[in-house]
Image (cartoon, rainbow, N blue to C red; front, top):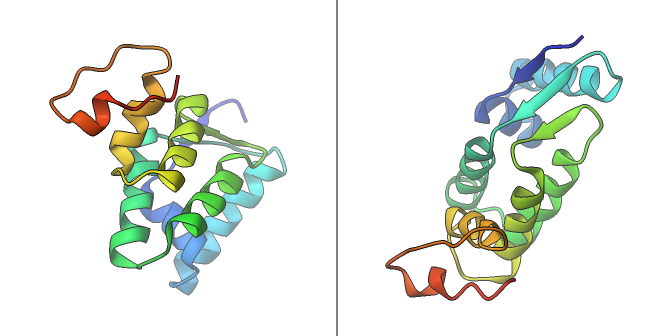
Length: 128
């Protein structure tokens, strides 16, 4: 299969949470097909951000569990994430800093680009 399948937040959440039998089975099948090389899954950075938000705010999952789980998921064979390096870095920053995940993404990008913000915490990422 040469086409990438872009997956939505709800697919990732059902796969991780296993809280809806039918949707979990379909998402599991999709991830298994990626791991086996039959499909290529593409996860947008915005989807990762939404997954982090939902797990943290709605499901009250702790940061370390979120980060560890997503690092594993995004590293699976057949899974590609938008701007992999910055996304993975943002997850590590999120683990150790008191910042919203989107701010962590911007901090991760600040390694390569100048980031301008009126938020002093963001202007002082100091992760270069």
